[in-house]
Image (cartoon, rainbow, N blue to C red; front, top):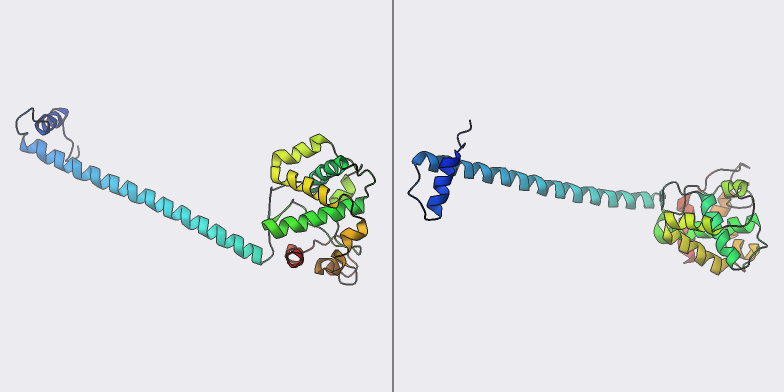
Length: 229
């Protein structure tokens, strides 16, 4: 037994004495009580110190995370807003919003041009990627091959919109805003500024050795869009 293992009777005698209802406890009871009190204080102090250390370590991890985020953004490596969010899902949600504006004569190049504007704007304002897939380089400018291949009909349903809204309400609202802003723009309107940008120049075959499908740097897209704002 530990030296401070006080018996229930000894502890009761100390309690009664402290409350003024009993005689002075034995020296053994007092010694054990004092030892127990000291051990308890030591344990509490150790526990509180440990908890404080945990808080400090958590704060340090948060600071390190923020610093890593800043370093990553400076290097042009951006996190996905919703990890794994499919560009096809966003495209269909956008199409649903465009259809509410009675835009039925959509083309895939126009859809992709609007998506690229959205991708660049979200990157510049949120420091995050809109979805999992990078735009790729072609001689016609940035492209989303996955959208081009998998969006078979240029229509979107409410279920398509709801799917994105359930993953991120902000992105669903962003689709609505983009449809409101760009529904009556022509493809030429959408690509006018794009053709002078570094991402477009880097995507062009003259600067890309004729290779299509290479991912375009988010840092270049970010820098271009920031200058437009």
